[in-house]
Amino acid sequence: MRLAFRDALMELAANDQRIVLLTADLGFSVLEPFAERFPDRFYNVGVAEQNMLGVATGLAEAGYVPFVYSIATFATMRPYEFIRNGAVLHELPIRIVGVGGGFDYGSNGMTHYALEDIALMRVQPSMTVLVPADDDQTRAAVLATKDLPGPVYLRVGRDGAPVPGLSGRFRLGRVELVREGSDVAIVAAGSIAREAVRAAELLNGDDVAVAIIATLSPAPVDDLRSLLSSVQTVVALEEHYVSGGLGSLVCEVAAEYGGARVVRCAVRELARTTGSQQFLREQHGLSAEAIASQAQALIDAGRS
Amino acid sequence: MFAAHHRLGNLVAIVDDNRQQALGYTEDVLSLSPLADRWRAFGWDARDVDGHDPFALEQAMSPRGAESAPVVVLARTTFGKGVSFMESSILWHYKPMSDEEYEQALAELGES
Image (cartoon, rainbow over the protein chains, first blue to last red):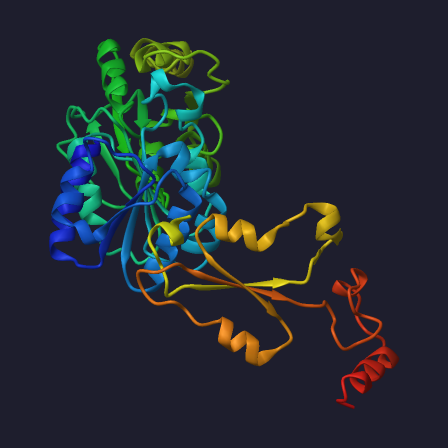
């Protein structure tokens, strides 16, 4: 999804001189084309994420639209206070690009697993939080949000393979249905959505809906309410800790508006081992099989 | 490091060097010495100045201009200067004045 992000950014930058790109020394074989085409609008600030946000804050105050780029853990946690007291407090158009959600950087270990980024960003008022599920949705999200006056967090996964049925649809604050069903709905954010579709296929005897949420903030309340009232049993799936992300969002809507049973399919414990993304997803109950079994349990409970 | 690396000579930083902080004197809590040397090691043009001398401050606060070293003015000050009972006091970072203390402070400053 990084390349899709970069290509979309270059298109925007060609038509908007205010756009600048800062990286904390990451983006090898991704960001070079931007740097070559727009050398005066590209800054490698070094491995200094707090300063990256500080510089971005100054640039935004001066009228620029800065995109800051690093691996999601480093883009969100190290400079968090700067994000809060800069971008959020002063309502600035800083776009924080966090590469690699969940276990995308599997072989790099826990320091690189973004399992709390959605929670941290979502809690800040007026921070738009976007988690596209594939390349096409990434591009659509970047283009659709180009004029947002406030700060944006964009979690860009690595694998951007298309989610079947999505066709790159993105509307800010909405839910995109990719599969209809009435027994249970699997609601997913990010590239893990492909596992949701595989899970639905494993349950081919049942009527399983799959919906993609790419906007975590502002919460897609209206669409979620509709979905929850028509299906009533939901598996909320994310490659993120169980607290504060998509699952919590779905529970908030269900609790405030009533009527749905929610199961949160997310990471519930420390990732103490390192391995491939596939291995880690299996370890933490995020494989298609594990998701399907959660959905099946909900269906069975509903019938009994 | 960023400012020095990119030769941001239009940047002037000012340190109000009163050598004290919330719970004590800086040298006792977490020493910053040698302050000027540290800034210079990172590529800044560090200028030691009497922080109570407006003419010296004005001179020191002059940027070098683009493509040069950033400037830092290390203004040596005395916390609460001019009020005998406040000078170099940790307590007076926090304490509000009584009416009497207020009158005395103004008198000492020649402002009553």
